[in-house]
Every structure is written in structure tokens, then in C-alpha cells.
Image (cartoon, rainbow, N blue to C red):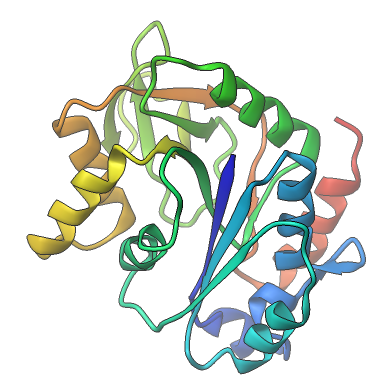
Length: 234
């Protein structure tokens, strides 16, 4: 399995609230968030890890370049207008086949993630397996509509009747998704959620995998909350 991390945001809210470190280097359970993700990926049989950071994050760039990993680390340094554009730049270095993409501030328990990855590795039919959660932590959640077989039928900005899940910000998919991604870039589409809608519109087989709780680190107060969450037994 190949893995990719979007860490190209500015982390402006954390900085405004007094957090001096760049978001990827904020420590959770004794290690920088981005290093925690890398270590989890390695324990989940990573074949390669690709990461995008913005041009201003020189401290993060130096940290990543200092790492010695047992698998290839593809570092992309690029300032982008959206996470979808960051994903497009990552797609240029990602190997063909299955991969998992996440943002650096998406926090989950390792055992939940390992089961999710195993489910996608065993899935021979789906073009993508989206991590979804009933726990709403995002300030602008993306609601995920599924059928009785957990096949994704729509992504919605607003809650709908009987809405159960929101996107957890973890996306496992095959390189078949790159065709839709390239088309979105060519057509001037922006935002990751619109790319996800395009996947459904283009007929890709996306399924949802429910994880009880996934949290984001957007504010200074979220750091302690996230640390407490990952330390709790599942």
C-alpha cells in the first residue's frame, strides 16, 4: 500500500491562537503529528510515502528531509490553492495501484486505521474506500450518503434526512481516480469535496467504511483533545 499526506495548509488558526510550531510538527503523544502518521503507515505495510508541504514550511521540509525511512519518501514542496490541488501534485509522484490519502491533522486510533486499510487491501471490487464517521468534529462537515450496502451515492454539504456519516478525511482509492482528478483540474474545479462528487458522477465504485471517531486539529484546544483521544483504549 502506498500512502500520501497533505500537509500544505498554513495552520493560520493555530498560529493566531499562540501555537508557535507549524501544524505538522505539533506533538501528539510525544511525537510530531506528521511523524506519527508516517510511523503508522510504516506499520501498515507502506511501500512508499508521499507528502506535500507548502513553500513557507521550511522547518517541516528540514524535518522530513532529516528522516531515514525504509521506504521511498517523495517530498513535494508546493503552495497550492486547495487540498484538491495538493492531491493533484501528489498524484504526479504516487505509484500506480492502491493508495491511502489523508490530511496531516486528521487524527485516528491506529488500530481503527489498520482494520480500515486491511479492508481495502482485501477489497477486489471497489475503486475507493472512504473512512466515514458518525462523530461530527469538522466545522464544515461533508455528509456522506450511502445505500444499504455502504456504497456511496452522494456527498452533501448539508445534513439530510437520516444522515448517519460525515467524511473522516481519509481516502483509500486506486489510481483509476486520477482520470477524474485530472479532469477536475482541467475544468477549473476546486475543493476536495467537489472532486469527490465528480468521482460519484463518473460512476466510480466508492464504498464507505465506518470508524467510530475521527477528529481534526484545527484549534489550539484541539491538541489536548486529540492527544487524550488517541491515548484512550478502543
